[in-house]
Length: 118
Image (cartoon, rainbow, N blue to C red; front, side):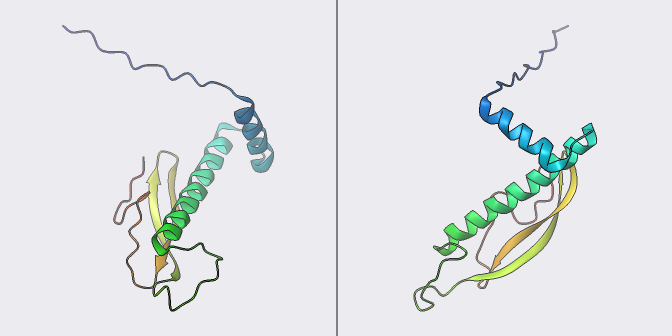
């Protein structure tokens, strides 16, 4: 019978930057339990995905959200957001997916019709 391969252990290197981030996290979310940590991470995951999608939209349209542009140069522009429920290892939550007027934006971080981001 073959031996079962052991999964490698992931060792986290603690840096000053990580330590400062953890301290900010503890203060911002008033963490007192393991559930509080999971809730904070779920919130951070959702906000990170949102920021990444906004950056994708900036790249897609060719200009940033608050940037003034000549409407004759750009035909397509932002058209609000659409809620999307996704499932992660931290549980289910809703993200706001940015929309463009011509419906040509194809999100890459969480693709269309993708529900599971585990």
